[in-house]
Image 1 (cartoon, rainbow, N blue to C red):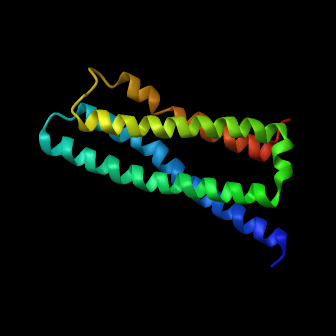
Image 2: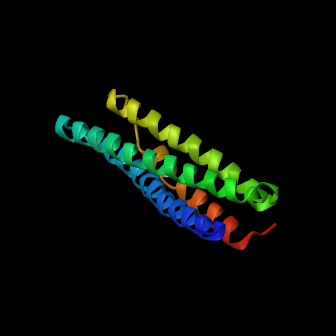
Image 3: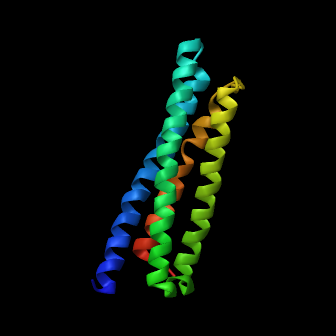
Length: 144
């Protein structure tokens, strides 16, 4: 198989698992809002289970996105010299920080440490939009 064909397979799988990861990043903060606004024990327990399961799925997506991204770099290390790609890596680091923050919220909410209101979580819910727009615009437009 030609190296260009392998590269395209890696790229397709990188994008597919990125979609999985982002699906989780978009939905899990919404679960946090529902969880923080729940008042009865069955709903609190249900949201804890849903959050843990979704986090597992989105973590698998993050790991496989990273794996195929690293394989893309292995095939084309010249990407590291591109300024747009360097900025994309900054977005990636921020996404991992956000991912970890989601993990922390799961623990806080499961322990019953519910926020007084869900205002911060509603803002937290919007952050993945910035990541998605940034990464896609950088990868497609390559502005610099």
